[in-house]
Length: 349
Image (cartoon, rainbow, N blue to C red; front, top):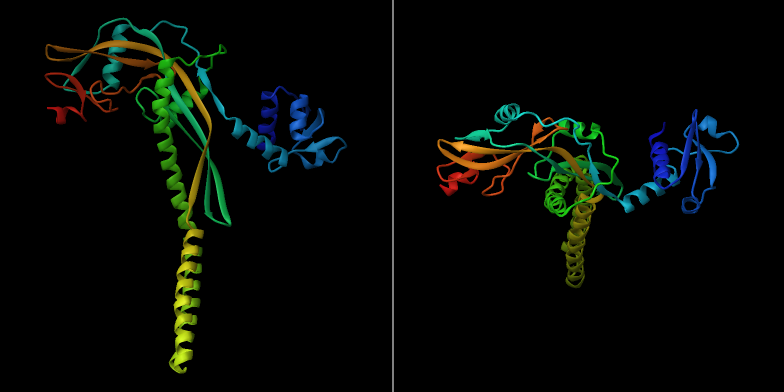
């Protein structure tokens, strides 16, 4: 099915409409409000196949159709915001020995050893999913759009890799409505700033690449303007050298005016090819990933420092944790006086 038509049918379903597929066409029944919004009948048949659309009563609806563009604008304006809970595991937590072995294998602690000290507690760890539509303007004639998305572990602020994202996408979702409690909202709020910086950095890289592609046209237009004004100034100078004093003054003033005009024109050309981008967020999901909080002691000799790691069932791994001293998501390290990380302990001594 045409991706544009597929999107619109999902949009209709979300707005309370009904759709029924029949071969290469689809029967659509719209609520009155939606029908009025798109100026469409309450009931009609749509297809993305031109041959089928030639039949009476069948509307051709494919990528680029004004109805699809209107629906896309409405979806972007409304946004996609919510809390999603993944299905909690139906099995008990792994045993203490297995968890201890896993955490020792996966988590590195400099100068320390991890011992599990208690029973795991069920938790839901928030992961932030942010999607945005980025519009790049390279020149008045060139404009591009792309969709960017990032997933951030709200607890550590670390960006998830492709494998973990694929696992979360495939994980079954709970049908029960999820609520965003204060700790979840606080964690998401903090991670949101980091997500924006990630998206902005990605957009900057793409904008630079697009700008490089347009630089040849920029150089050609800039060179053409410089040559034009250089010829004009040479012509004025030739006439000035052979003119009488009064005429020479007028030509000197014209030369000064031409130089000012040249500066303005070159600046206009530079601004014309000044690449820009605009980020338009449209999705904000707090994905609650089920897991187990495992209490541990991080040991250095006889010294013990209580801590906890979280085993995320859907990802099959322990989440990264922030340093309890400085808050950085860095490798933990143990000194003779406290538990910290490789970022803060050398400075703290």
